[in-house]
Length: 220
Image 1 (cartoon, rainbow, N blue to C red):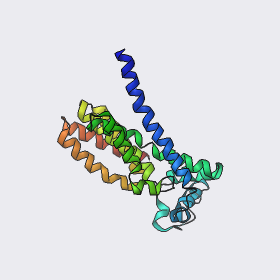
Image 2: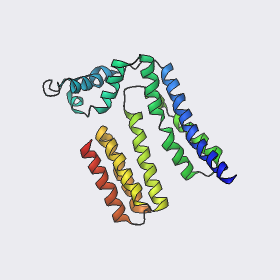
Image 3: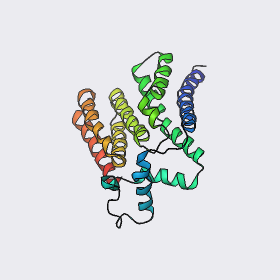
Image 4: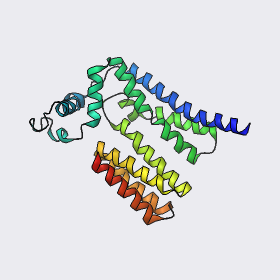
């Protein structure tokens, strides 16, 4: 009975964030197709140039933005080309809504009461005007929040369980996020401070985190 009850509890913590992600997809669908200024400025163009070998010919048509990593833009560009606009709106809202999974983990880490865990997760997913304002759009802030918060979850896990592997995964995640969107690098010193203050083997932990994040940054 205890194992069955444990399984049910774990199942709830998986189903609830997934449900929130589906709701985010529905909200994104209601917001219709994304037409923000950056779409016309460089989000579509960067991906087009990358796919069609124009990066070396069209020199800075969107200014400095022409030289940003085109990977995330390519996802949006590919979806626009091959999918129905309604499907694109739902899909991007759903993908951005996956941020509910790391938020749920963070809530469980700091809060013991189960009801409060679920409530806090829902509030974080729907209570931010910035997040809702960009929901389903080609702006990458919501999407890149997923690996950033997953990296933070790995730091928390490493601190709680004194597990060095978690720091390596954390570094890989934040390194990938930084490679995709440079502003993600702002979180690296914050995570380093947490590791230095609360992780037992500070030097080993900091080295594992930094080396893996640098490696992934170079790869991406």
